[in-house]
Length: 264
Ligand SMILES: NC(=O)c1ccc[n+]([C@@H]2O[C@H](COP(=O)([O-])OP(=O)(O)OC[C@H]3O[C@@H](n4cnc5c(N)ncnc54)[C@H](O)[C@@H]3O)[C@@H](O)[C@H]2O)c1
Image (cartoon, rainbow, N blue to C red; front, top):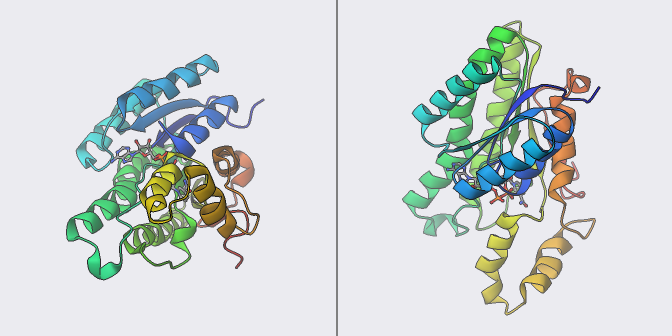
């Protein structure tokens, strides 16, 4: 029996990078996967990959900052499958990467809206069914930036710190309501080789004159104690564990998968 046999999983940001890796690893572990992202082709491609692994794969193109739309997707998923077992919120953007006093109000609001508020919208939409079932797993993709300060990163870091706070509050609320079968945890990836890291590279590389490969290796990977970028699959293995029955006693945690970047 696979670890997530016949579980119904929803993965926002599932069309790319970490979300894609999680959706595919869930499918390999036996789950049916609903992939949500705002990029049409990627969303359908990953849903197709899930189907080719022999599981039900549904791609839904949506903006997760549209709370009404997220609610209607939750209703659709629950109508179709009769349940939602796992919610992963991986949809995210890197933020404006400027000093606080130079960050635009619009850029700040956009980062917080996508990275933090959308997590709240997703919880509101998908939690009622889990509460009815008395079981569920909420996994929020935060970041090492949810734990560590850094310059030119305040909007992103604030959103990721906020996600950890939201996760911990959800975990304690489920316990207080007598629903220990619902757990909430965050994963804090370190630098992971995804299109987001490529975008950061393209944003900062021109200042250095480095090639993309050199920049990734010497300026990003070198900040990791293990001197490497993580593979998105490494984040997915942690998500599988947190989604599994084996992790039923793990709640309210923010798990680093970071090559040793956060050593406390
Ligand atoms: N790559 C890293 O080094 C790293 C490190 C720590 C945390 N993270 C976090 O991991 C998550 C995934 O990042 P990634 O590296 O896989 O990046 P990515 O750019 O490959 O994937 C992000 C996904 O989010 C989707 N998305 C963005 N805005 C959306 C919106 N408004 N509505 C719906 N979908 C939306 C994109 O379409 C894409 O599918 C993000 O939350 C990111 O902050 C990434």
